[in-house]
Amino acid sequence: MTGVGVASLGDRVALVTGASRGIGRAIARRLAAAGAAVVAAARDDHAAAVVEEIQSAGGRAIAVSVDVTKADDIDAMLDATLEHFGRVDVLVNNAGIARDQLALRMTPADWDAVVATNLTAAFTCTRVVLRRMVRQRSGRIISIGSVVGQMGNAGQANYAASKAGLVGFSKSLAREVATRGITINVVAPGMIDTDMTANLGETARTAMLGQIPMGRLGTPDDVAGAVCFLASDEAAYITGHVLAVNGGMYM
Image (tube, rainbow, N blue to C red; front, side, top):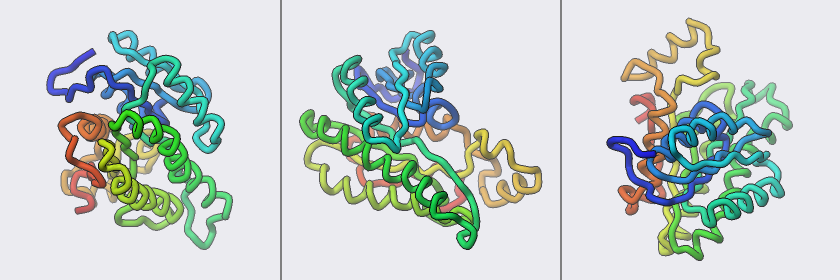
């Protein structure tokens, strides 16, 4: 399953969390198009559809049910990956949630849930696969951040903190494992045309577009292309980097 102008990932194995829809689904499809075997991880059996799509196009993929806030689920996810494909070369920490509210009204439960899913789970997933990558002396770990983690946004203190935390985590880890042939990077999308933005009212959507110099929302494929690049040999000398995919919304 290959495409014109797509960075080649040869026989590498890529594990993508939150792969059932939106950005995660696009990432799984793009990595498969580049030749990777894909483990599409999501809650319940929600990733089955993207796996069927990949397989029908001649690619290799399996779906794995995982709650990324549960360590046992993450261990089982890695076990399934190794059982089917024997190794893991790329980890994409994409699973994430938002529970928006002004900070004065935000409950501790909403804070904890967002940080647990968006930040702590990325640490747990990374820690599990990193041992394999260190032994291989190769690997790519890419976390999906957000423009909100760079510039902030009213009503999203928990979400912004979790995404900003991914940047600090990734930069620190990049320094720890650079000599082992492992790169650690972040892709920070801006406003992407997904289910979340589709539910915005016309007024909010117009205001949002007014902040984007390119005058349009991004697409999940815009983000997937950046991830595929960072997963490839073309990005072998890039680590500790935050790649913004935001149409100029934040520079």
